[in-house]
Amino acid sequence: MYRTISGAGGLALGLEEAGFEEIGLIEIDKKACDTLRLNRPNWNVIEEDIVEFSKKDLLKEFNIKKGELDLLSGGYPCQSFSYAGKRLGIDDIRGTMFYYYAEFLRQLQPKMFLAENVKGLTTHDGGKTLQTMIDVFEELEYEVKFQYPKPHNYKPVLKDVLKNVPKSEGAKYPEKKKKVFDLVPPGGYWKDLPDDVARDYMKSCYFMGGGRTGIARRLSWEEPSLTLTCSPMMKQTDRCHPDESRPFTTREYARIQSFPDSWEFAGKMNDIYKQIGNAVPVKLAKNVGESIMKELGGNENV
Image: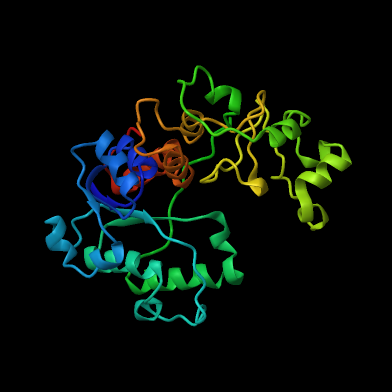
């Protein structure tokens, strides 16, 4: 089984665990490429801008025939198209990152494709953005349907995944912020603070609408983690450790994203947080990959 992918490792590793073999991983970020090479020296890591790479003869680059590729996978930003919903084709999405993904699809004609994105894509621009993408996929003669994995009966919570985590570096709160979090109970957030402390910490955000539940948020051991961000220090998306008044360490970040402890990350601490925060959870990728493998008839036992 073969596929192409870009990224820093989560999707790639999960699909490898599902039984896929890589033929090329395209990524422009140097540290992410260093991480891929560090962990999988045998992978064909292509450190290049996908905009430029997509202009090449992709069949020749990967030494395959059209339709031979089993799976094309990757992600791209969720973008709004001013002409969305008009059933326009691939030529009308030029200039968007989605275009370059579609160009890979057009040239390679894989048996299946996996396009990773955020949940908000389904409602972005009133659903028009997603519809434009579906129109393009159908223009390329793909049917957009798939039997997703069945939901698991049990969702792991933090106490399940943060046992005996290897020591690693991690960001630290300034002393003033640490004192604020000392007042927040596990599972709590800014509404659990004394009003004067909340006003001082939140500044103008105090008067905004909405729940603002990510501000001064301390997670608890009995809940799944909220989505991790590329920086553990952003006030709008605080993710404080359940017991200690600090962000999660880089290795705790990796555990939450279901990376094995053996998976190493290249770069400085902030580079590592960014790579992990941007990653697809490994076990999620594996589960989806196993369903794709079944569809392809590659492994009836997964």
